Image 1 (tube, rainbow, N blue to C red):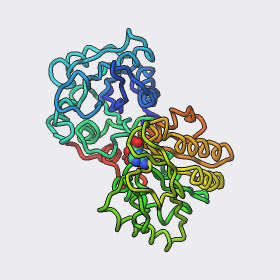
Image 2 (cartoon, rainbow, N blue to C red):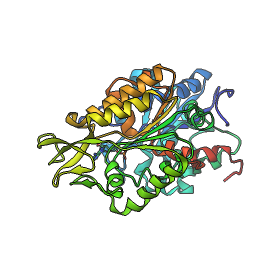
Image 3 (cartoon, helix red, strand yellow):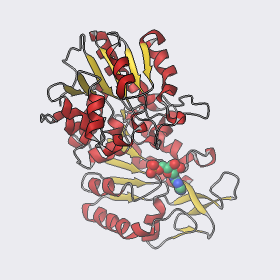
Image 4 (cartoon, rainbow, N blue to C red):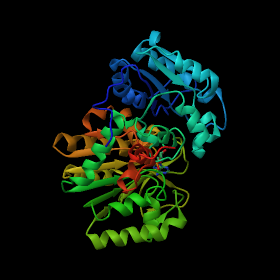
Length: 400
Ligand code: AMP
């Protein structure tokens, strides 16, 4: 891994791709600054070496410039961390304005560029756009693990303009080390807890893990496709009919490999996707018509807890229920507590994915988890064995 560890950035303008795609409330205040704080060690390294840090990021999914998605909303957090006297902002990420701001940036200072996704060229991986970004700095650092699985202009394509002057930041290096550790040095029992809305977005990781894990704990909306595949009655619960065969296939593969699949025995159901409906707990394979499962039930929690408490390696991606609604938060909270307790007993736990990390933060358990990844999709793809474009681009030596 080419990392910034042994480099010195004195008098260098360093372009850092960070992942400041953080949640904002209706007043544009940052509600979870985990990803910003995760980039601080790399920024500090550049400025304490006597260099200048030029930060690039996306925020949300804008279709062109939009105030709502402006990175200026991040400034209060950066000002608080680094002091407003050394934090600057450019309202464009390329062109004259950005060039002027970058070239006049004093060493030891930080320049935050406007959202790179205000240009459609960013997601297209446009080489001309990448060249314009590259013109702003003398060294390129990628520290945006959350977007490392994307071949975008600022995450991968830009690296070809820095054949001998590019590296991964501290966060990227940390992510890769910790995620690789799970795969390379598995202590058994290995329990993978996979939840969230859809089977379709988790199918590859499920497949990839069948020859590695001892137990799958499956929760969240994806449960019902598995239950239907096994002949159960799931009422109005979330279902992906086109994934039923794949769900059956996963169950068969698990049998072949001796992997135990734990589906929730019972589910907390409602007749509405809201907190004010009628709430009834049903066996997950016998849910009444008109009711949908929105959290795992008490029996399921007990079974899942006992499996987690025996684990030596734990991977968790995806909540157990609709944890954004307090009424359906209990299962996710109890599983989070169990992961934290197993970690205290010596298990290595890796939690990743926006919603699982949000849940861990909501329950104030981040310090009790071995490693909380800032990447969701990126973490899963890395675990699937896919070479992430953002990392590959740093290793390549071909100039643009
Ligand atoms: P993912 O991004 O695939 O990890 O999915 C996270 C989302 O799944 C969260 O917004 C949850 O509210 C949602 N979710 C979890 N359990 C259920 C469920 N039983 N029914 C519908 N949505 C769910």
